[in-house]
Each structure stands twice: as structure tokens, then as C-alpha cells.
Image (cartoon, rainbow, N blue to C red; front, side, top):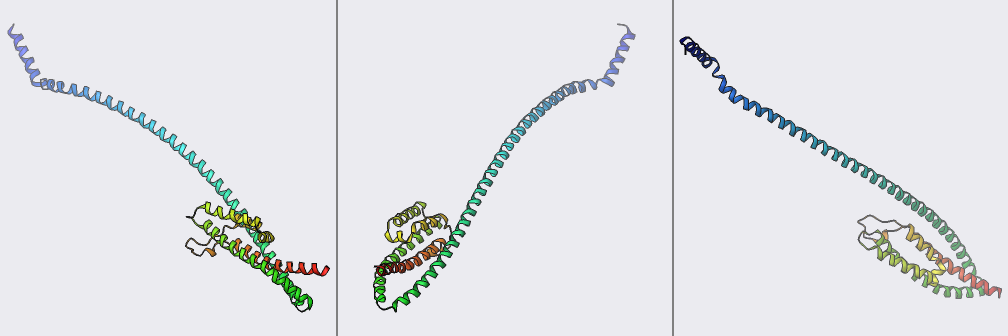
Length: 258
């Protein structure tokens, strides 16, 4: 090797060692880090895209379920509104029927009171008519036996109807017990001679269908329940009194014709 070249080589070595030798280790460390950073970014980006795909999928599923729930809720609300409207119409129909029946009973009661007054006047006249008075008293005593039977029957019906209405208004007593009472009363009204004379079966069916009146929930007095039943009971009481005098009148008129 020539001295000049050796010196030049030494100068170059010195140049590298003095200016660039520090860069070589740094480069050796930074290259892998750069490569790792690139790979990490790719992985992060890959996971981000994967996450967003899952998020979109979950979002779509939730939107689908939410839409189904909303649709079902709307369908349910529409059905309930329809049922409420039907119930409201039925209630209004029952209310009108009850009002109509109540007015009818009030008018019939007035008529019975008028006929009763008229018969009382006729009774007073006949009591002072000599021989007819004895016949009248005899017939009246006989018909009073029928009246006593009718009064006893009405008391029994009143007790049964009071119990029936109490069961109807109760949240605890079984419905079947009420139906048994109604069935028993209808059978008796269709077979008992006194009940047949008073025509009680029709009134009972009206009570069972239209009397929905109940006192407040804290009520313990059974007689505070019901409205239509009490009107009918009073109507039947007046009918008993009226029928008694009509039966007497029928007997007397029959004897007078003979």
C-alpha cells in the first residue's frame, strides 16, 4: 500500500467516525421501530374497521328490534283503544237502559199509587154500604192471607237480592256464588204462584242485567248497594197491595152479577 493512499484511507475513516459513525447505531434502532409502527398502524386500522363493522351491525339489529317493538306497541295501543271504545259504548248503552227502566218504574209507581188511592176511596164507600160491607170484609180477610204470603215472599227475595248485589260489588267473593243465587231466584219466580201473580221474573232479569250500582269500597252495609233492585222491590210491594184490592173487587163483582 502506498503511503499516500494509506493516509487518505485514514482520513476517510476519521471522517466517518467523526461525522457519521453516530448515525449508524441510530439507524439500526430506528428502522425496526419504524417498521413496527407501520405494522401497528395497519393492525389498529384493521381493528378499527372491524369494530365499526360490528358497531354498524349491532346498530342495525337494534334499529330492527326497536322498529318491531314500536310497531307491536302501536298495534297493542290501537287494540286497547278499540276495546275501551267498545266498553264505553256498552256502559253508555246500559246506563241509558237503566235510566229508561227507572223512569218506567217511577211512572208505574205513580199509576199504582193513584189506583191505590182510588181503591181506598172505594173501600171506604163499601164499608158503609150495609150488606156489601160484610161481604167486603170477608173477602178482604181472605185476601189478606194472600197478601201475607206475598209480603213474606218479597222479604225473602229482598234478602237474596241484597246478598246477590253484595257479591256483585265484592272483589273477593266468587262470581259463581252470585250466579247460583240468580238461578235460584229465577226458578222460584217462574214456579211460585205469588211470584207469578206479581210477574217478578221480568223484573229479576232487568236487575241482573242492568243493576251495576255499588257503594264505595269501604262500605260494610249491604243495603247501600244497588238501585234498580230497590225500585223493583217497592214496585212489587205496591203491586201486592193493589192486587189484594183487585182480587177483592173481582170476587164482589162476581157475586153481585150472580
